[in-house]
Amino acid sequence: MRYQSGPLRYALLGLSACLVIFLGTSCAPKELVRQSEVEPYTGEVTVEILKNSIGFRDTKTIKALTDVKIVRNGEPAGSFSGVFGYQAPGSLKTSLFGPFGITLMEFLIAEDIFQVYLPSKNVLYEMRSTEISFSSLINGKFRYTMHEEGDFYVLLAYDPAEIAAAPLMKYFFDSTYLLNRRIIVYKEGEEVITIDFDSFNRKVPEKTILTFGNNTEMSVTLREPEYDTDIPPGYFRKIEHTDKMVMPFQDLLKRFDPSR
Image (cartoon, rainbow, N blue to C red; front, side, top):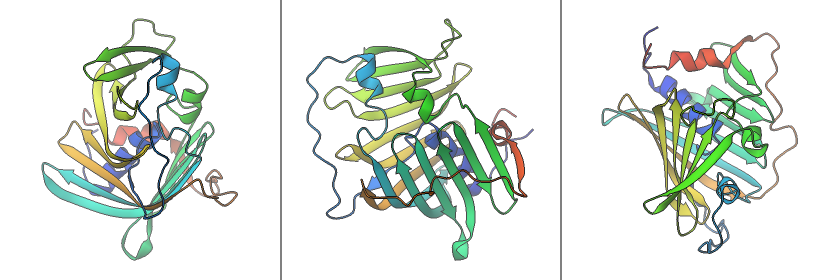
């Protein structure tokens, strides 16, 4: 299967990779909406401390508008707008819109279910008990090691069933605040995506850049974010099958595999 190009396909790939590991966000702070100050970390650094530093730390909810921009080979390749919602510890939903407010994609992580819905095709990609999900990180599904690398602490996540295997993910934390600055996702020992975080609004990054191996970058910005406010009950309800064509989530990933 050949690699299929196109702004929507790149947006779906980037958001999938980023959101699955639940750091695919960036926040441009709304005036008067500020996170608490981050103090330099002075305690002992352990695997558990680094695990607790992944993601949004102690932020309970985030609501925001979102802008997504795609660049390929240095040239603009598409832009999208949407809405984003997060609720600790394990729920995240993003919707992207096209012209005239038409929904292009809905993305949901809730408990152990991972769904991507394409309304134009009426196709729902779904995966349960995901290897890389909120619950996996919370429940300690991975085997972890850590080391220092320059000015960073590095946390590596492995499949516990494969002792000699290459890492699945690699997290970088700055040594001053233990803010998560970079994530590298691996497939069969090869880097498949790098996610960089910068310009932090206290604990939350204002900008995220995803870099892929085919000279494609995606930047994600959240506009007018609100932190620790109420989100309506049912917002993170799973997407029902009804009359949709339901397919394994792996089929969606295969569409974006540049090696095919």
